[in-house]
Length: 205
Image (tube, rainbow, N blue to C red):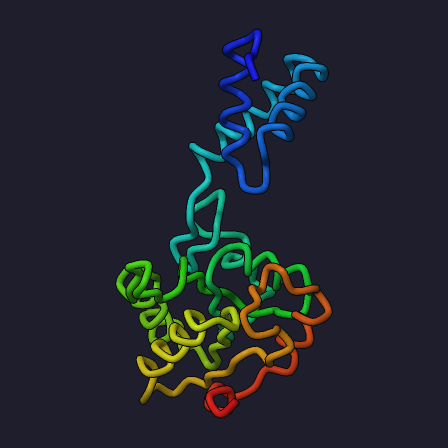
């Protein structure tokens, strides 16, 4: 397609880079912004600029945050001694949507995957081990996807925690094998958290 405007074409090119957005949808979105007027585009641009310039990772749990510490880490109502280990920020959002978990989180930033060149040193595993000692964590919940990478990462951390006085559990397998937490429905995910099991028992399944 030949665009009458190079500016429009550049906008479509950028929007089409978003996941799940093809060029036709990108064009439709760009034209929608034009119809809504320049103020709408400026508000969107301002929000995206803040996303790029001001958003950061929590220095404690590595969730996304507007400040050095995220709102979950600074919330005095959360349980300090229970730590839920997740792959990324989408999993935090998925678990929070269930309103069933009242502890705190640790975001690894990925999973161990030798085929993709991702080893333990590329993830926030060392900082997790430090938190266990410094914060006197009593329970760690593995809430990683039911995939080979998720299981391998859980087992690696489990081995690293051997000898420490911390209870290690895993969410129950209400989540299907191969599934990601972010795609699980809220009821299934809530039940998986509520009925978590000792991690050693999950190895026998």
